[in-house]
Image 1 (cartoon, one colour):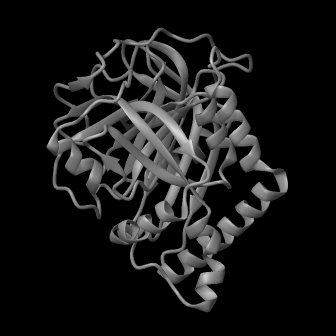
Image 2 (cartoon, rainbow, N blue to C red):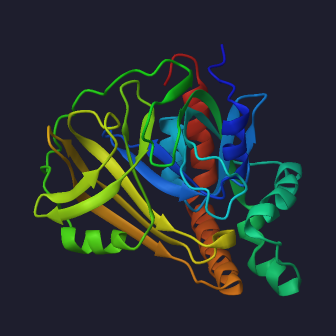
Length: 327
């Protein structure tokens, strides 16, 4: 039986309109990673499916999604998009990865993507440079089990749940063997986040689906970053969690992305996030420079994927997940 759920017209306007969303997936240790992706309007209200595209160059992310398909998308910003709705939308569901999309599916994506990120560059030089970026994409399709909306982008006020019942707060997790204290410089982490307007935290919910919520940073000390979050969005106790801070301009030019993993401790008085790992990405603020950067990154990622046989490995992993009695 399908777990997919249909959503409201207002939520559909958000899903079809946002230029970027926060995608969260789970780690083997029970944590969550949250990163920014461009859905380019992928969503079928009548079928209860949302999604995004990515590259085979991000094999680690794809492997984790195939192994543990419970994922979430947080539609958290209307900047440079096509919806005026104030809703914060959290979509949770089961992902399937189309590792070898048909030429027809890839071609149909071109005019759709152009609406969000601008005209596809064409010509002998561009065609060669951007071949992997445009034509060696994979699709992540998500059959939604639950849609949760809040009346504003800060996720304050009452939440409305459509689909599977909200499971309540998740239990605390055991601390990692390496301890819960920060493992990278907290002051530097705070500085990297300070100028970025969009900040989100992700953790594993009580039923295994990632939960993604907006946060603000109130300061930092030796224990970590002090978070400000609307009441009820974070469960009490400690747990692994991922943090995303990012900024972007129209057509996703001038991207700045900061991705952390770490330990969240929610006490009676405050929430503290101790960062453990960090990755960052800054894209050129000019369209042609961005395209050159994307093209070169995609070429290198595709070369690595072919060299390592990544597509075949991921397909074998996906077939293993589909066998009766497994996963």
